[in-house]
Length: 287
Ligand SMILES: NC(=O)c1ccc[n+]([C@@H]2O[C@H](COP(=O)([O-])OP(=O)(O)OC[C@H]3O[C@@H](n4cnc5c(N)ncnc54)[C@H](OP(=O)(O)O)[C@@H]3O)[C@@H](O)[C@H]2O)c1
Image 1 (tube, protein in one colour):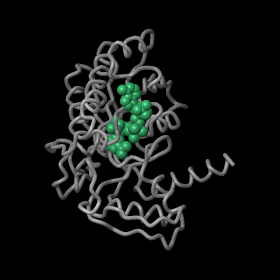
Image 2 (tube, helix red, strand yellow; image 1 turned 60 degrees about the horizontal axis):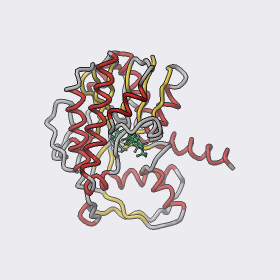
Image 3 (cartoon, rainbow, N blue to C red; image 1 turned 30 degrees about the vertical axis):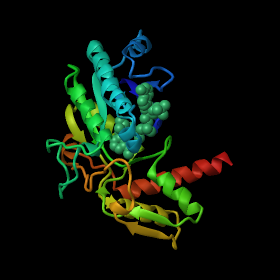
């Protein structure tokens, strides 16, 4: 397949390049190719290109910054998506939009199904949901892949932050009352490929298997790194005020993904181990 990938310099973009580059022709777009909020730039950058699908991974992902820069959040997450949708429709390509667990309000106590009512609590969540609506209205064949708690090489992420603090021996306070599924960008890239191969359409949830809290996630990172006496204190969300409210519970059901592909993404703990091992061999090679 020929895939036009946006957000190529981000976490998922890196993983797609690494994982899918051998078996597909990738047209990788970073911000240098086009500011996607500008329809004219998208049109110019796409001139003469042919592709079967657009994997639209670009987004404004700084959840707290979205609260104070709401206009930019909507331009980045809704309007840019509308422009990529128009391009996909014009070229007869499938539009794959990567969306977020933050479209839900977090009041459920069992994994969210694709058809569950949305109720975003933050500007980021509302702007990602507006992106989903733009996709559905685009007229292009589409696939919306909702994921959660993404980590991997190529951008700021929880695993690197915790690993860095542990390396400094810094005490950590980590939220224990938000529950979700950490997801490795490489595994998500694989999931997107599988779904594209099956011709899946509509909304599909794709995360690593299992669930935890941010505190449990931090403990696992410390365990994999062999930091046995890590000073990690569990704290309640209220003790850790942030500009954007987060859902308390945002585990996404993998049932539809399994029905479509016959696969589960591996458990999140295994994925963390893989990432930290790959990260330490990359660091050793760079020395
Ligand atoms: N990170 C998570 O925990 C998470 C969870 C659920 C869903 N998602 C979704 O997964 C997708 C991939 O996330 P990620 O973590 O890979 O994001 P990321 O690392 O922040 O990368 C996003 C990329 O998009 C680019 N971008 C943003 N606005 C742009 C614009 N107007 N024009 C061109 N490029 C633009 C950014 O460039 P600049 O750096 O120059 O701004 C960045 O390179 C996103 O759709 C996100 O909403 C992420």
